Length: 242
Image (cartoon, rainbow, N blue to C red):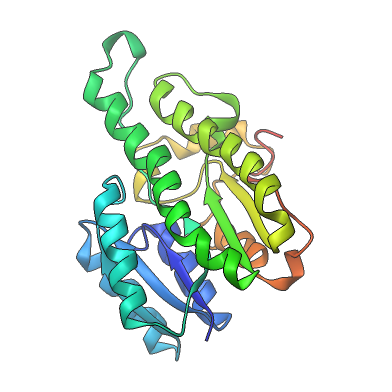
C-alpha cells in the first residue's frame, strides 16, 4: 500500500486532504501537534469508510522530533517508504511589522518554512532511492501577493514557494515532483472570524472555497495523472489572484 504523510491532519484542510488520499488508496499518516481530538476525528472518518491510516504526534518546528519520528516509523515499517508528503501544517501570528514581537516572527518562520526543510529532507532520501515521490506544499495567497499584517506569514510562504521551484529542478530526474497549492479564502476554523459577506465580494466566483476543493487538487498532484507537472504553484482562490 502506498503511504502518504499529511502534516496538520487535524485541521479542516488537513482533514479533507487525508480523507481524499485515503479514498485514493493511500495509507495516510495523520500528523498533529496539539489537536488530538481533531486528528482522531480524521482517522475515524478514514477508517469508517474503509480507508487506512494512523496518527503521529510531533512538533514540526523541532528538527529533532522530526528525525525521531522518521527513524521510529522506518524501524516499524522496514519494507515501506513514504512516497507522498503534504506539507500542510502551519500557523499565523498576524501583526503590523512595527508592532511584531520577535517571537511572532520566529514561530511563524519555524513552523511554516523551517519545517518544510527538515521534514522534506528527512523523507527525500527514500524517494530518491525508490525513484518516485510526490511533495506537495500548501502555501497561501499571502505568500504570492503579500497581505498587510502578515509579513511573517507571507515571508514564510513565499519562501516555501521559492523552495518548491528550486527543489523541483533538483529531483525531477529521480521521478519526484514538487508542487505547491495556494489557497485563497477557504471556509475553515482559521477564517471563521473574517467577514465573509464582505470579503467574498473581492472574489470573482463570489464565495469562499471549501477544504474539499483544496483536497481535490492535492489528490490530483499526488496521482500519476500529474506525473508531468512539477515546480508549479496552483491557485485555489476563486480567481482572486492569478
